[in-house]
Image (tube, rainbow, N blue to C red; front, side, top):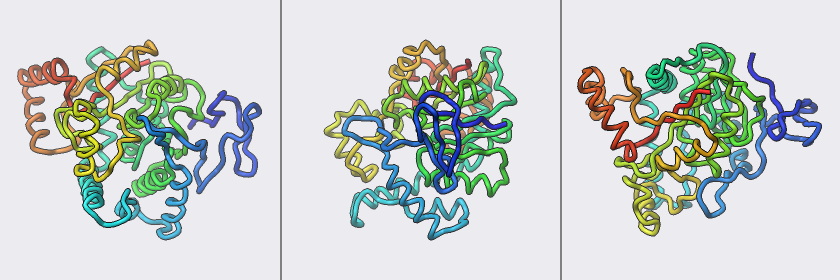
Length: 355
């Protein structure tokens, strides 16, 4: 059974009348929109100063236009539609925007729908070091799931998946992908992950990948996920590093936060084709640990989990890492270095917490 919807503010029972979700204490808290339960409120604030927020109205307009022009389209059709550029004219900036999206699509294609399987392998490898194990039943929550690449792997392991995103465009794409591979027991919900419309303890597994850098209040995001996580459930956060030694995935700049902001503003025009960082704030290892410590949640933070045997993508560097992982002596040295003295400058941080 997939979880019932409750009021995202008080977890009270809801009635559903005329496509509207009504809470006795808070009135209308959601409605059905374009075939999805929608519990968002306008607007959803984003990280970093400057008043950034998710433009839900524009997202709805784009989604309606997408469905009108491409009814019943495939996932690839939706994904390959030119993304809206931040610039009005085809200039230097829009060239870099298009290049960024092309690189992103290349990375996504390389791993394909193996994303979810690879993530579960990483989590299993980490939990096994302390004698724990990933739940084999229950429901998974894919929070702010983007294009939906993880849900096939999650659905093949768990009894069902709830996919949450604040973007209707992402929900349409993820639903198309799930339908193409024949997945059942998937529920797609539009909601703010800092205010989820689910009861306490609803999910055996919660996954938030490349999300914490976008929310305005990371502690609130973590607190809400911990609330809906079941006893013995596993909570996973993957956070791009603010001080990564490799190019940061959102802006393409190494040691991003170490560079003065006035210089970064000039660099991101060339590396990403945008002029503002509002909406994306990569977190440091120290910050990640502090968020969980404030909530007294015990975590493990690694770059590569011990006992990991495979990687989702295959690049020159990753093939080299794979070879090291296959040799016990080299694996021990590699993991001791990247999960120890170099962890603070690794490309991302994998956070695993078991309730």
